[in-house]
Length: 119
Image 1: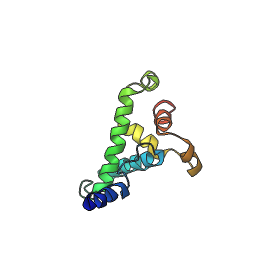
Image 2: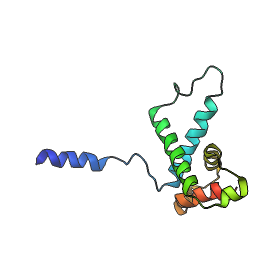
Image 3: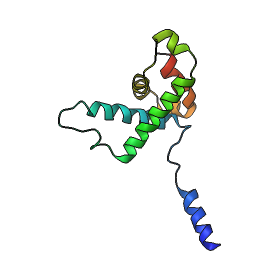
Image 4: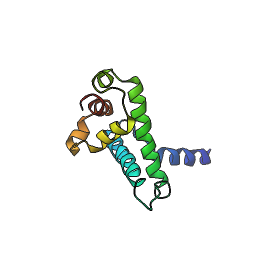
């Protein structure tokens, strides 16, 4: 029983790997995508060799969230801009100017909507 107590403490003490309701984390993850894809075009660098597992996981998080949103999103983007591009949307999220106070007030869904519909 004592061993179970220590195991449960170690599991609860860890930070969750993805903070899916954290708009700042989504923006940082999308910045990883942009940085990785910008590296791939530089001569003599190989993005796969210079990308850590953590960077790749964050980039994958951004790509997954953006692609899922595009599948389930309102038709605002497709009616205005044609078919969406996940990298274009990730780049938009990465480059949004959002202050620390705004990050505390905005939800991930609103950040995605802004990047998808208001460009």
